[in-house]
Image 1 (cartoon, each protein chain N blue to C red):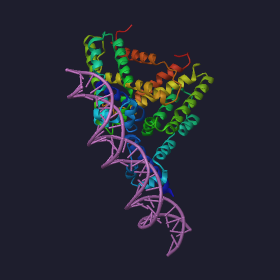
Image 2: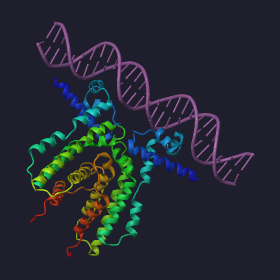
Image 3: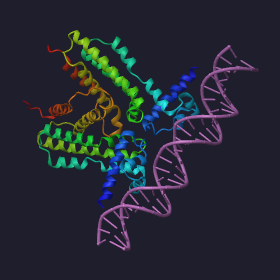
Image 4: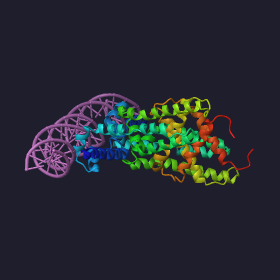
Length: 201
Length: 201
DNA sequence: GATTAATGTTAGTGAGTACTAACAAACGTT
DNA sequence: AACGTTTGTTAGTACTCACTAACATTAATC
């Protein structure tokens, strides 16, 4: 009984890995089967079609629950700290799922439903952040700003950083040598300063 | 005689457009032919194979000549102005060729030679910038810094901005509403300030 | 008007590939 | 030991698609 689940998960894992490297169309069901140490039939018995593999993988990928918990329990209402932990969590989730991100992006024209599934995440996260900003403003810990625009800025910055950090380095063959952690924390610090109310030291 | 060239260019243009949307494997030679208003045979007579189409497109794409001219004639040795024009040119070239960038990136595992062709560009640009920094330091207009690391920072920032600006907005369906031009100029301004020698107003 | 170069047309080949059907083997559970 | 569930095997189907060959057509050059 537990074998079903684990083989299913195992297939998904290998499929995402291969598709992340060679693209959805670049990988055959045979390849996925071999990489999973499983017969091709097993794949079709589990998922029915190649498209469903990707669909299933996309549905299993979601940072919404994780973010939900973060916003419910881990916030300190210190602006900089909170933005940092939100960003850090976002970065972690994106990095963990970077293959899926790429596949979804590449197939955005050919498999719109897959892309639709994936794009729910940032939209939901934007809502979370906007609610947080509203709360902070009520507490007098935030300047009166356009909550949506500022939430967007944060996401924008994070997405840009993720893409350059997680994806390009292996591509553009340049000397990295830039410390990753510090870049993020410094950006967040600046961003938080810009949002704090006027009375500063 | 001019017809050959123009049909060839026309095919390349349409091929890149389609591949940019649906991926290299997602497009058939038939589709490219139809989009180009041309027989499938014409394509094979011109390029021999589907792979050669992409290869030819990649070889035609290069911002090196453009950058070469910029570095030779258009610099003013005002740090901020120069970095801005370099960045702006980079952004323009990347935006003009964004389809090719994506294709090359997506096929980095399956068609390494294509990727190799594309990656010559940033490496060359890095060299240009490093030489520029060396000159500026000689003129006493630049702090003594690690030229390679700083050139990397600039390219890094530009690449990150390009990707979020040119590619993500249509993807993540978020309200853009952020002014593009100002974001870039502000970043460059900050970057330039960080590189100027100490004696500041 | 004849020649040449570029393109069109048609038909087809061969390889790859998603997916199916039918039966056999392994496995755990009771 | 019997049963049900999951997986493996094999063979095959239907389809797509890159690519070719042979011949017809247009268009420019001289």
